Length: 220
Ligand code: T5A
Image (cartoon, rainbow, N blue to C red):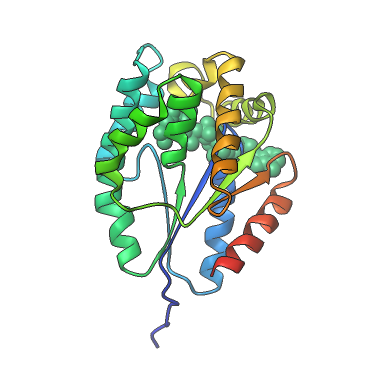
């Protein structure tokens, strides 16, 4: 017996500061959609392809490196170019739902609002990589950075990772940076209310999953 999967191409991104619960919520959403017979892929940035994962390690794990904000954008865009071409576009063309842990809003929030690179430069450099591709729906998981960082630190400790072994590069940067990133995400949501939905990430995993599922169901 062949199982008929529902065909619907939809590009959903989850964004937010460190430890906001993106990975947890992507897994919950993928389970819910799969139960309803949608074809789903989950992926992440930086990363999503073998080449992109190499850039992720350079970018995230190399705690000694002092990349300039422009160099950081070029690194994430190199990974994104591979990811869009090899993973995201083919999956959407095949009628799948793509759930992506971070995408272009992270570049604007971290390198733009956080590190001060101007939005126009980021937009211009991103243009050839993205073409007409934009997420259909973006969840911005919002919480005070102090809470997110304490969740991330606990997770890394549970996994036995610390120092340069863990993906802790940005978590070492000062709180002021994380506050700017949070404000950046909220500004993005304010500027594009038809695409972005802010989710309170201070509540339980189940409550967050419920709010996300309600919004996705309306879009399907
Ligand atoms: N970056 C990325 C840029 O600077 N520019 C870019 O363009 C891009 C794409 C890597 C870094 O790259 C930067 C941003 C980042 O610094 P990442 O790995 O996605 O990005 O970074 P993190 O946000 O640090 O990833 P985390 O895995 O730490 O956070 P998640 O995925 O948001 O959270 P999750 O689900 O792993 O949860 C963290 C912990 O909290 C618990 C979980 O069980 C887990 O232990 N938790 C909750 N606890 C209580 N209540 C809830 N509601 C909870 N939800 C989850």
